[in-house]
Image (tube, rainbow, N blue to C red):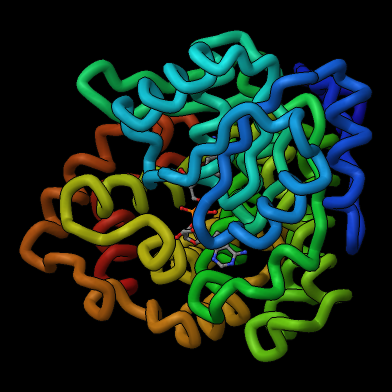
Length: 339
Ligand code: NAD
């Protein structure tokens, strides 16, 4: 009933530029923020884009870090922060996937420096203020200092993504949208974002997996990834992410392939709860197959650890909060089907 709607929403102020060739707008955006001494954080995969940006920024680049490690290790954050401080950087510019953005976010949280992000995958991290640092003192949280002030999406930077990364990263974005439809913080605004995100991803991903250079489809997928990040930040995550994180933590799968192998099954579970949820299960299965990640057994997951995963996942509070709660039997059935 519309009269019964009740929700909270924290929308952030972020400037987004989108379009082919947009990386050439980086210098104007940096100037508009008043940044004079930029630290460039760019993965090696983004070297040519970073070189092009660096050339245009000229002497405004005071340091460049290309050591970007997955899951944002504390040591990587500490060394990058030290360089930023020692070179007197007054802003951070990241070029790369979720790991590069994640490193920039962590340094921004440590230093208070403002962040500009140029994403090259479908991770969607740039749309959120969520950051994480992995180390002895593991920290995750939401901090507005981690939110990039400006995001520049240039689909041309994504045409070099290999097929497997295209599929797994795209499925990760799709998972963000699907979960945003029913997670605890879901509301009419996140629903609109998530549904449009799934629509864009479902239309574009099958094309870009086969034709990586199709710029229009690359653009569609990138818009979908942005919507996925926005909707996930507001709505939160639930069943699918809990099941995947547990596998990665206890049974040896890595993040992208585990997400791909689980997604068709969790979409099925969600549709049993709410039949009006988008049916992207077949599409997800097809993409997972093309990424070589159709089944958990194919991606290095240890079958003997699955029961431990069932017990650990069933205890996670997130699963008790999203109705109807998933119990150990349902989780076991989902893992076995994905195996
Ligand atoms: P990634 O950034 O780790 O990149 C994976 C690999 O692909 C790297 O080797 C990278 O160099 C390479 N690569 C990146 N862009 C490329 C391109 N255009 N062409 C060719 N190679 C390229 O992976 P990801 O999937 O982008 O990001 C995943 C990470 O992001 C995870 O650690 C995840 O936790 C994090 N994440 C965080 C949030 C958040 O809100 N904080 C949201 C989503 C994801």
